Length: 204
Ligand code: AR6
Image (cartoon, rainbow, N blue to C red; front, side, top):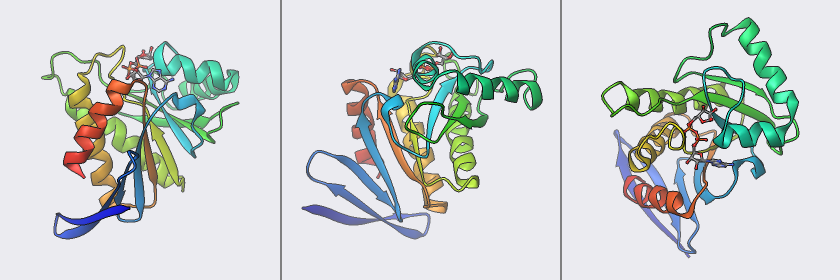
């Protein structure tokens, strides 16, 4: 059974559907937002997003997993971007796209989230920009689906609850304007999925 209700957002109506079977799925206009637990390197989407660092040369966490599983082609593309567009490295909040090597996804969008330094150094705005720029890039390339990890909430120590709220709110606001992209949030842990689900229930 599907429960349906309407929500008034910025003077227009957004249909929100929530399936009762425990799946975390929401609708914003024609677009679907899904919350899943898993490894983002296994996701089949037009693009998966990498929580990279400014060097674009790989690292630990989700970045390490994407480069390991995707193979050397991704790093080759990153090196080209560093040699042509972002000689000093990719600034925090920006996003770039490369091929996805051996991954099931077609492309990888690399963005850099902020390092948490207490919350008064522009962290919320920079985290929102990382999501916005990734979404804009995907939409500008005509992509139809995008998967996000929980940017900045690992090595960069952004508090998960705050980061989840920003991630969901930024995606929702984007889809209210452009509902041509389906979005999946890939939570690595059960705890992260629970936090996202709780925040999404309130927001959607
Ligand atoms: N699939 C989905 N989520 C994952 C995966 C995975 N395979 N692996 C980890 N996570 P982090 P950051 C989750 O540290 O905080 C790197 O070294 C993880 O549980 O990957 O943005 C980069 O090179 C956490 O919730 O990224 C940078 O130097 C989330 O992904 C730095 O870490 C983000 O954790 C970026 O730090």
